Image 1: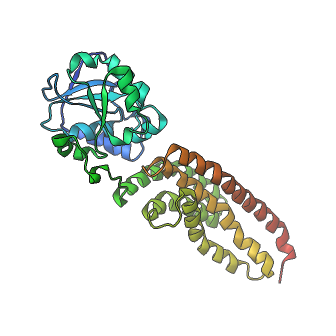
Image 2 (image 1 turned 90 degrees about the horizontal axis):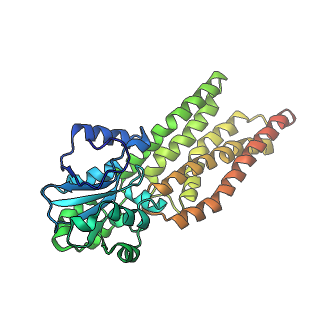
Image 3 (image 1 turned 135 degrees about the vertical axis):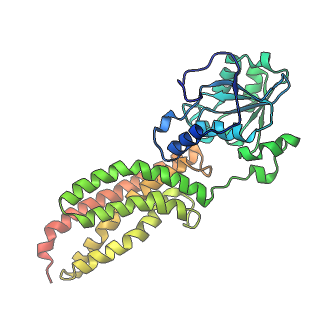
Length: 336
C-alpha cells in the first residue's frame, strides 16, 4: 500500500494503521542491508491513524519507510495525523542535514495538504533530529503553525504526549553497538561488488598478499571501525580511521620486513613503509562514511574534516605508490 509511486499524494487524508506487516518487515530488512537504497519510501502527504478529530495531534516525519513505520508503529491506540515530507527516501536526520527535511518542504506540505482545514490547533510535533533543517520561527511566520520538537526516539512518544515535555533522557543521543553494526551491514553489502572486482583482478595474477591487504583495509573500515568507534582516540573520524589503519597494517608491515631480510636495512625500511602508506589512507577514507551515519557530526564539521584530511590521505596514498615503484627498481641494488 505504501510503496507505490513516490509521487505526491493528493489533498485527501489517507488512512493508515499502526500494524507492521510481514511485507513491511521485508522492506525494513532490504533497507538495512542497502538493497534498492532509494526505493524505500512512502508517498508524501497527510495520513490519519485511528479516528482523529480536528483536535488530534499532528506528527511530522520523513517519507523513508523505516522512519514512517517507526512512528506509526509506536502510536498504537493514538488517534492522530501523520504528515510525511518528501525527503526522497532519506531518514529524518540525514534529510535534515541535506535540507530536504526542512523549512521549505514543511511549509509547502502544510499548504499542499490544507492542514489548517483539517485541524483546529496549529501545532506540529517534529522529531528532535529534524531540528537541523527546520527553522521553527520561520515556519510559524509563513504558515501559522507552531513547531514542537519531540523526543529523539519514536518509542518515547507515548510518554512524551502525557506532558509534551521531553526528559533529559529523551533528548540524549545514543549510538550503541547494535546501531553501529546495523550501519556496518549496509556498508559491507555496498563493498561486496568492489571486493569481487578486486578479487578477480588480484587473484587472477596470483597476488594473494595484495588481495589480503585490500580486503583487510576495507573490512577494518566497514566492520572494525563501527565496533571500535567509542574506543579509538581523537575526535575526528578520519584521524580515528588513520589510527585503525596503522594498527591493522602493522602485521603486514612486519611480514614485508621478514620477506626482505636479505636487503640492506634502508631498503627493507622502504619496503615496510609501502603497505602502511598505501592502505592506511584507504581505511581512513572509508571511515568518512560514518560522518553521515551518526548524530555526532554536523555539516560544518564534516566539511572541515574533509578539507583537512582528504589532502593528507591523497598525499599518503600517492607517496606509497611512488615508493613502491622506487623500491621495485632499487631492489637489485640493495642486496646484502
